[in-house]
Length: 141
Length: 147
Image (cartoon, rainbow over all chains, first blue to last red; front, side):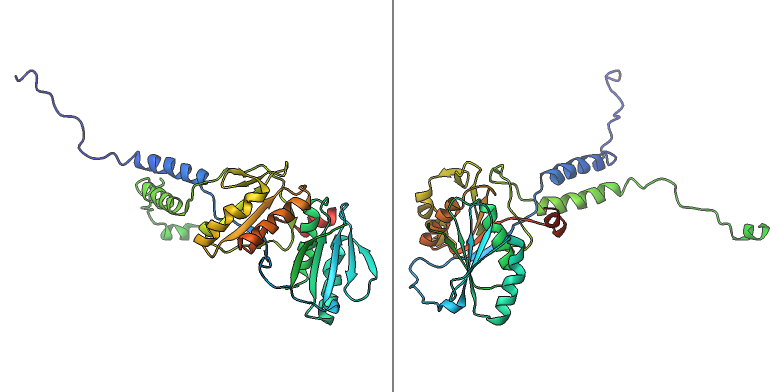
């Protein structure tokens, strides 16, 4: 019996030296798989479907007609005169208009064939100008 | 120089980085990432983002946001399912009834014709989910000037 007996050499403690390695391994895994909650965009509230039509007087309207090539035609509600501008001029233009009339509604009418980014460019400018009342429509031919 | 000798002290600090506390540091970081991590439930669709300077951070809980993807071929995906345009309202309506705080984030490819986006917003109006965001990436002034 005495021959078979061996000296117990296995330590009964958890090896703490490798603990850091294990923890870092898990850490790197979570670091690479983590996605922080990031939702960015241009918020807008759509009109509800069953809402009754509201008559807006023409002087409180300004139309931005987005053409298929990305150019923008500005049309003021009361006067039928039209003005062609590039997208990045809209901010200053609308800011001046809003200073004169704070009830102004910016209506963005986009041609069906125009790329989505042209509409976003215009909406971006309208947002930058601080307009609160925005309407999105499709431009009928 | 000889004067300085009076100030020398025997340094008792070890020159090695204490490895015993390393595990604690690592576990602390680990727990932080475990708690803050949210696994991606949805497949990301490869789209070219539209950019806008006025891009805002949407402070809304993840569960209140519904993504509507519009890929470059103008196909619409909601919750990883290809959805025909006319049935968007039918899909969004029960989701909105369940959660009144729902915000619909339209993640559209920048070159999709606007008619498609309009079709989606029309469907959303019908479903009652009227809080919408057009998901964009931030555009820097510099970038704009270069164009």
